[in-house]
Length: 497
Image 1 (cartoon, one colour):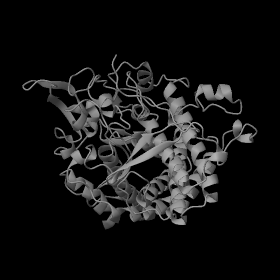
Image 2 (tube, helix red, strand yellow; image 1 turned 90 degrees about the horizontal axis):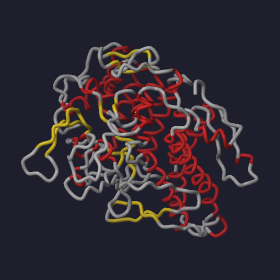
Image 3 (tube, helix red, strand yellow; image 1 turned 60 degrees about the vertical axis):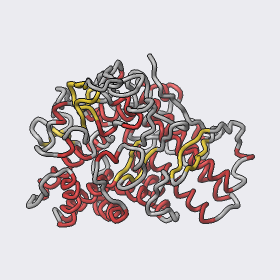
Image 4 (cartoon, one colour; image 1 turned 90 degrees about the vertical axis):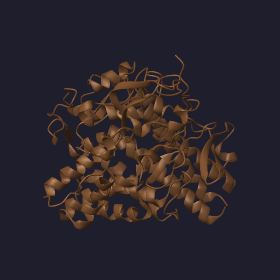
């Protein structure tokens, strides 16, 4: 089977170089395998290059294969609103809750995240010793702190108690075979790193793909919101989430067209706060190939994999008249057949136009759309939810939700109780942030799932999803990869796995 996505792994001794073109900065790979700590970090340029390399670990979430497996898809399968029409046995096992700790996706995320953390630890140790421009030094340390927090935030939510490694590991280090640390201590480091990044001189907004203050504050607000819910239930963090999210809102603007979420001209602009960067000739992906219907010729791709297809029930859960459900907004159900001037392909499903990359579909099939990790509507909804938990519905909280609804051509919310407003915000998160890897984490922190049939929320481990599957309690976490446990006898397995 032809498949044009190359899989890459970023190792500790591989340096990846950012190349800069016009106002955008893209990722270029150069092998610096002769790197050792004693001959690197001698100049500011070397420090910059090393930090640039940490960014490439972000690619791990979009890595995929010809069977439709990818971390960004696995996260959606766990949430229960997705079918997979590809050939993946692993994807089917996740959907039907019969997967196990040998699923290679669990290992990929674990290993690549710790590779990124290892690089970040080395950078945070060495860069302070480099003779270089102090402003740039401070900024690089801020970017690195954000990136370490970013990867730990994924690890702690996915696996629970995980090894906490904050300095470079050698063959004689006690952290060579680390044990698991409590969730609370992982979050303490994440919050500490993000607070450090707040004061590192980062720009409020960055349109080149690097970390900005907006990204730091959005991620920190998300961390506070998460820690206010399960399992920590530090409800005092709702106020911190609202305050931190409010810092983001003045610096970004909503797009007036949903097309701009997934085209090339608007990368890193408007409402897009933090993305992983792609460019033809430098680094490409198969996001569109993985999300178009299986084996239907809707673009110039070697494969059409159907790895992530929304359920019809979830699509139908949107309010009548919601612009996001109109053809070629967030979803689409037909498209001109590639190579034909007259024929149209009818899908039979509602696929994700949200990730359809028109440039590659109509071109040579090589996709370089960016993947979005953080965007303005998430910060708006964090603010609304967190402030509601503290003060109930307020005009400011309504205003944030209603801006999102106005763009979707929906009537504004008003006159709701605190509980009603909470549910309305949760629905808006599901509908606006659909298939952006937010739903599974929302289930974890709220212990509620969206019951699309009744348009309500129900207990996560007793409410069947639209595929007739009731979530097992063990699915609140991923399993520790079996290979890691076999290698390190200090690691224990999560309950139920």
